[in-house]
Structure formats: structure tokens, C-alpha cells
Amino acid sequence: MLQRFVFLGLYCCVLAGCIATPSSQETKMKPVIVEHRRGTLEAWWSLFNDPVLDRLISSALSLNVPSKTASEIELSAGMPYSAFQDFHQDQSARLIIDVAQNYVRYRYAQNQQQTLAVYMSDRDEMMATLVKKKDLADTKNPHLMRIKSQDNALAKKMLHLDRQVNKISRNITGLTKLLPEYVSQILKETLSIPRCDIAPVLASSTSMIATSPEVIAARSYFMHQAKGAIKFYDLDGIFPDMAVNGFYGISDDVYVRNDVRWSVAAGHAVKSLNLQSLEDVYSGQDIYNDFRNHLFDAVMELERLIVSYALIQEQYIVLRNAAISNESDYTSLTRVGKTNAASLFDAREDVYTAEMATLRAEYEKAKLLIQIYEKLGVY
Image: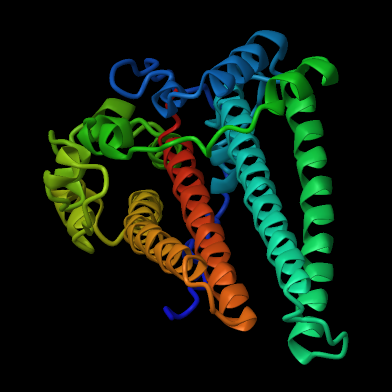
């Protein structure tokens, strides 16, 4: 009997944002205009190949009016860096992220419901068969008591999932501004968790990172702290002209198959940044040190997300294979006429545990990929 698989959660370390010392000179800040990026990552949610997600995001964008824009926010060079981060956040991009994250969370809960329902049904059938055969005729049988206790716990879990699905559906309704009846209808059919593929991100240019909200905020903050001594375009040559996978030291094999195991070369991205011209002029100055720290944070945060995606991808492969193996073991046991009740229930539980762990890994993959798109700020 294979041992049960328990999903290991992922923990991504996030560096805290630095707070700059306010400047005595108050200079009104103008928004930095960055051309909207087109190409491989435009409408990235369509890469999930989920028509329902496409419809929800399209509706959210058409029915929501942003409450404020960057040009309506007044900032000064003396404001903390966090204010510059907020200043360069795109509300449409934020809305897309919220809809997408809620949608994959909904599909995850819905698929858990379906998997749990099948498991409970199989347990009921096994119990009915065993009672009929009088294998569990004794109501004080410890194994029978354990089965009933597990059934109660599973029923409570199903109620929890029901409440969770309803709550997420309401969240999606609020985000999209669609009628609740319409949202319920299009979400009613059980679909798999959106399939994700990080290859388009890795194949894109590092210019996507150079013009991401966090990097733009760092550049803008540096420019304003320098009080006009630095122009925004002076910082254009920092990122190398290469694909994201090369920037982070990732093998091209990722493009060939979506289920390959791969890793990130730690620190490769930071070492690839071209800061020499700035070092020559500003080395040791506080405003440059702040800029460099914020820039490194932005690059390394994206690196951490990609590393987490690689780890969960590897974990997903292992869990999926385990689920297939456990299903095969269980099927073999059901064909053996004299299998004892405890072994049969344990084998079915192994299948359920592996299936739920695989679903969790699928969800984590989708969630992490959406977070990567969020950091890039593309749509």
C-alpha cells in the first residue's frame, strides 16, 4: 500500500518595502507614461483557454469605471516609496487580477466538491456492500465506528465547501457587476481548474520587467529624489536585451514540454543588471542605494514567484503520478473478492487524498502564475 500523500504548502518570502527619508523640497509629481505593452502577454488570461474566465474579465472591464487614475493623485518627492508604488498601480490590471484569482479559487473549491462527492458516494456503496455481506454487522466494530466518524467529518467538509463556493460566487458578482443569476448560471457547470503554462512569460522580453509597476515606481522615485538630475530615459539600459528565461537562468527546455522539471539560477537576474554607469556617478549616495534596493526587490520578488512555480510544478508531477498509482492499486483491490474492509476503505482514502493534493497543486500553479502577471502589470 502506498503511503498517503499530504500536500506541502508553499511559502514565498516577500522583502519589506523601504521607506525613504522625506525631502525638504516639495515637487509635484507627474505620472510617468509607459506605452501599454502588446505582444505575447496581451490579454494573458486568454492563455488559460477558459471561455468563462474570458467572459467574466471582459464584463468586469466594460462594466467597471476606475475610481481614480494616476493623473488624479497628487504626490511630491518627499512622499514615501509606498506612495510611489500606489501611484503606478493600474486599476484595470488590479481588477483583472482580482477576477482571475477569485475564478480559479472558485474552480478549485468546485472541483474539491466534485471529488469529495464521488468519494462519499463510493464509501456509501462500499458500506452498503459490506453490511449486506455482514462483514460489519457488529455496530461496535472499531473499524465501523471509525468509518462513521470519518463520514461525519466529510459531511462537514462538504458544507464548508458549499459555503465557500457561494461566497466566492458573490465576490465574482461584485467584481464584474453582473447579475447574480447570470454569474451563478455560467459558473454552474463544473470545469477543471484553468490550465496554466508559464512558457509565454519566460519567452517574453525583459522589457516586460523593466516596465513593470514596481520597477517603474523605483525608477520614478529615484528620478524625483534626484530633483531633476536624472531623466527617466537615463535608466533605460539597466535591463539586458534578452528573454525572461535567460535573465533568470532558466533552461529553454521549459518551452518544449509543460511538465518538465526546471529551476532558476539564484541571483542570475540581479547580476545581469547593468548599473555601472549609475555606480560611477552615485555610488554610496542614499538615493542611489534606495533605488538599487527597490530595483533588486522588484526583480527578486518576481524570481521568488517563478521559483515557487517551478517547485509546485515539480510537486504537481509527483502528486499526479501518485494519484494514478493509487487509483490503480484501489482498482486492483476491488477485483479481489476477499479483500478485508479496512484495506478497501484505506485504499479508497489514499486515492481521495492524492486527488485532493493534486487539485491543490493545480490551484497553486494557477494562483502563482496570476501573481506573476500581476507583478509584470500586463493586460
